[in-house]
Image (cartoon, rainbow, N blue to C red):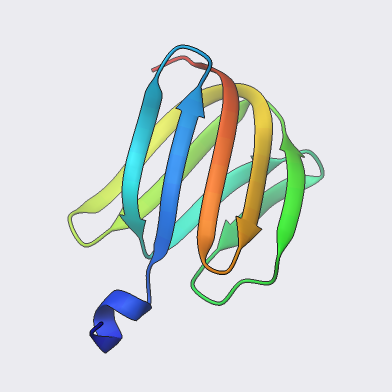
Length: 89
């Protein structure tokens, strides 16, 4: 595994209906219940409910923004899973 590849989070965003987004991200901004939280490679384990808002995903290709309604985010060992009630984009 190259050093560049090691600096990415493995990200999966799913709703009840479908897989919304999956891939490698260098940065992620999520609307946690108590405020926006930025996530990068090496982030401590983290679990939080999400409020309605926007998720920003930064990759080598640019930044993607997704509007979501509530959900939960889980971070462990550079793997980020988001389960959202609804993707409204």
